[in-house]
Image (cartoon, rainbow, N blue to C red; front, side, top):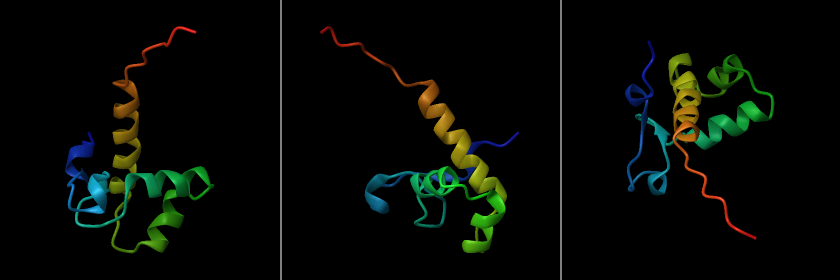
Amino acid sequence: MLHYQDHITSNRQVMLGKPVIKGTKITVELILKKMAEGAKIEDILLSYLHLKADSILACLIYTSEVIAHEEVIPLEA
């Protein structure tokens, strides 16, 4: 099983603390944006030759975990 913690890190001295792929300055946000624009994993790997497919999948897992633990507090109108 793939664990995002093996691939994703956050350090306030790297990209202002945004989650990035370990050993890079490539943010999870960038990977998600590229995928939302239609890029496939293979396209991203061709653009960033030092990345591995597991790191890209880890971005998706990380994001799903963040959303799964998000707490929504409704505001009264």
